[in-house]
Length: 511
Image 1 (tube, rainbow, N blue to C red):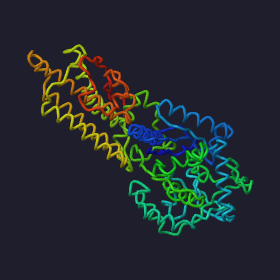
Image 2 (cartoon, rainbow, N blue to C red; image 1 turned 90 degrees about the horizontal axis):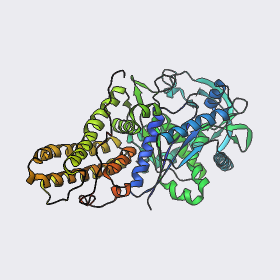
Image 3 (cartoon, rainbow, N blue to C red; image 1 turned 120 degrees about the vertical axis):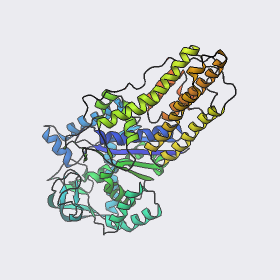
Image 4 (cartoon, rainbow, N blue to C red; image 1 turned 180 degrees about the horizontal axis):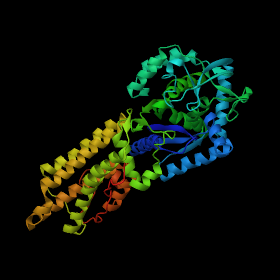
């Protein structure tokens, strides 16, 4: 059986869930639902990263112990994803005992192999990123992500011989061009690897930081947060059993934002090499959501919270905007005007109106009873073929993580269905009694278009897809079955009267 293992980053618990976390999690959820629909065994992992400087500082600022603070924020993440309808298979916390045990096992193995040594290092340390920067990586002397001047820290730590694996990683990236996707991020990593790679400081002295996993070979040091957190992708599978690891790990697909490219594209694969583990299948990198030409962040005060969006617009409408608006890998602008315009134009006026018109005519003309199909006409075949074309295009776009293009393809078919109504004019020809059987056929084909839309929309807008099942009076299994167009609705099958799928949203008061 085909499998795919989909992971989000372990989200850092120094802040509650915002748009950046939500986008990554929604694309992960969409991918899982899509592959499950295709008959692929898909496993989705998410969770929280809970050790390190930032957590200790945030806990202190809130008058709490690091563990109590991590418990609180991790619970918020889990509850948020549950309320957002995220279909994850496992929620990991890096404070889970099985994860800590696995981290120590890997550290011990790499230490015994001679790839971890004790030394002294001085460098520019960004507490926001929890990593050292070289002068070359700084922009005008500041961290490129947090726009803060890093502290110069000099201390004795343990180091991982990352430089030992530089050439092997370079050769791997050249032999497997799609290891990192899209290509632009692979190019960034290749450019970085063409400069000498420094060894990685992988511990922090307890005298400075004691909130972390103790090194198994030196209890006076705790593990650097990245060497801890990255191992979650393997620890959860190993925890479930060696057979689970062997089944899923070869198809590991990590989803990350571009700000954590270096740890995932350089630290993580070299760690895997040192531990004697195979590399992930793909590292999939997306861009930033920006507002007023700046990256969203808590520090900038422009955070968009997912549950606020669900309450205001509905979860499926919010999902649609995120998936439709951002070309995967590029940055995208977030604004309430753009969100409202997209919901009104695509969901309310276009698709929602199509469903309402068809179901209303079905009720008005035939009391909701589906009519039999007679001989097909050219326009009927063209409608069916347009949806078949959209399905094929969507498959290609999803393989390339181009969610926005997949939805464009489906909306092209929905546009065609709206034109089909204008072309066939059932509301006009019904006035002639001899034409009424033809009206029944037209509506039958349109119900098939809605049924196909429900099937194709299910990974993207799961709640809407379920609403359509109810309106059409058919189960999800029936919607997803491979019966040919025209064979889903028996003559006399009853569909429901229309209900508003996506209410129009008035933009007053939004900025």
